[in-house]
Length: 255
Image (cartoon, rainbow, N blue to C red):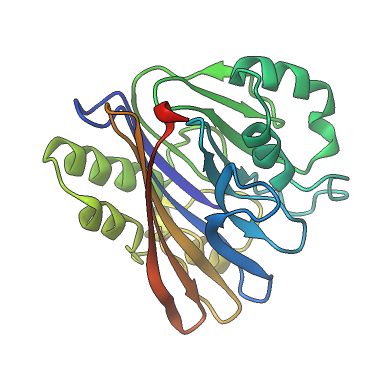
């Protein structure tokens, strides 16, 4: 996943609103969000190569999402798949802070990652690329493939759009539209992450599409003050959207 935008405790009815795009090669086998057959407690998409998840929730109200840290020319990939990080938290009963502290000695077993864990009222961030385990204060934030809330064009414009949509009380359709923006940034504002200008330009939009790589899933997760999780997801391939949007709502306070 390459873009997560979220609002924590910024709406009276929705203490947590998350919108996110997962970008991946179209050839990588993937299953859209579903209740997992081998763990019916988890609702998430699934990477069928490594059996992990890029974003998911569970019946107890836990939330997890991960992005890659862009580092071209890295010496070697990590031994473990980053999708294990989200899956592990959704299967755990440890509080997010404790889970991250327990995990930290193994951080370097993974390629670079940004990890967001918690529930509807308490969120934690961790990365194995020079950032401490941090509890997130209320506000609007973005995570892509650089440092937490780094001022990349798609993060800044995305946060502004999310702030406006939350302030105006817009529904799920408007929130999902934020993720569909394919406008690329001007070259003067592109980050410098070690790839070519052409690739930086391609990856600078919120929604990405190229011949073999692009946005595979757009996801909205909203936690309500009544203890519900509302989960909406659209899937894509190289030709465009695939199938009907997935919609799921359940009350985690009753489990």
